[in-house]
Image (cartoon, rainbow, N blue to C red; front, side, top):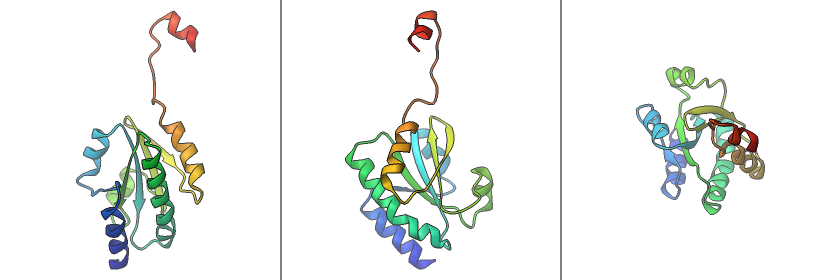
Length: 137
């Protein structure tokens, strides 16, 4: 447990990744239109293996000035969070786009995750309120 917490703190000291808690996750998602949350568990070896990929993703997101906030939360011992966000295994990534939640596959290859992230950066919906707009589609 201490090793994972130390790794998370070292990563977060030099990063833009926000460390969330159960008491802050809802407000953070509400305040930011696009959020990618890494649900992690301190006991998960797979989460430890995925952490470097998430760090690389963060660097690319910052470099390319993507319109998405990255966050992490340790939900491994919190069944309420697991149930609320439908976490069935670790690591889990969830993308929140203007309140719409989607599963996001944790991948080893950063470029694949960036390509998928581009799809999620599109608006979650749009309104067609006249025939001219409908014709444009």
